[in-house]
Length: 293
Ligand SMILES: [Zn+2]
Image 1 (cartoon, helix red, strand yellow):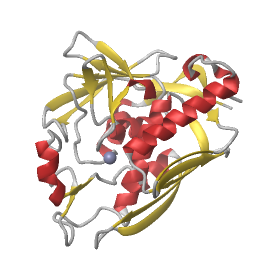
Image 2 (cartoon, rainbow, N blue to C red):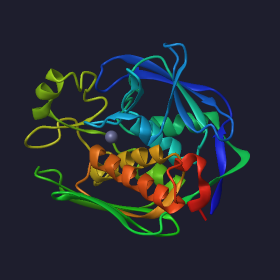
Image 3 (tube, rainbow, N blue to C red):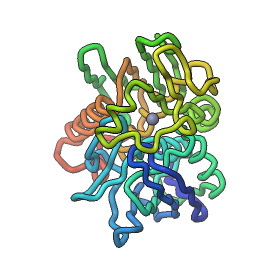
Image 4 (cartoon, rainbow, N blue to C red):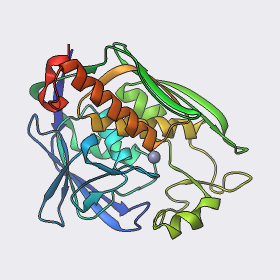
């Protein structure tokens, strides 16, 4: 099973504050040649290139960070989620600082950005990753598993001890328009009670009521919600962004329960190890399509 490789038609850019660093950056998306993959390019550091791959992940607390040596790009998941939803496989993501802008906390601004650039096929194909056996990672009450299927389906359940969240569950069939309507608008969640602790740890410095659904102990500080069950929808958004780090499209039925970035990342690691076993050697999946069909 193969799909067309795709890039964008023209350079497009967006600027904004980073959720954790509080630093303003400009992200400029550039078309890239077939086979180059998704790459962050630190425009402020002589164009240092950081592949958007699992092997590049350096931090997974509250957001996903990719890096090389001591240089990194943080909070990549919402942008990568939009890129994946648009089927873009090859793209240079120029950024002049350490963190992707949070914008409104959702993937919608990035969907509009890619839409403004336009997407085109590159005349080359990429093999779709189809796993042969179920893969699962479990951490106490948290779990995530994939079983073989011909399309990508995500089932996510969360259970927060909070009066406006509680239990939420969603079944999402991965498809561009479905993503645009049901998942992309779902915003990041922030608990007021965590703000001091996060800021002391150098996180959430750019967080505000403009870019998060902020919750206190009783309810939503900056309501109303955009969508019913917005929180579980955002978890699906995050998971798709973390799956983009596989480096190619994937199909399967994924069931996640109370997971987060660090479990998503362990899960992606397990998938890539399974790919290596299927291909019968240790060559990275990007160079070894033998497992695909
Ligand atoms: Zn998120």
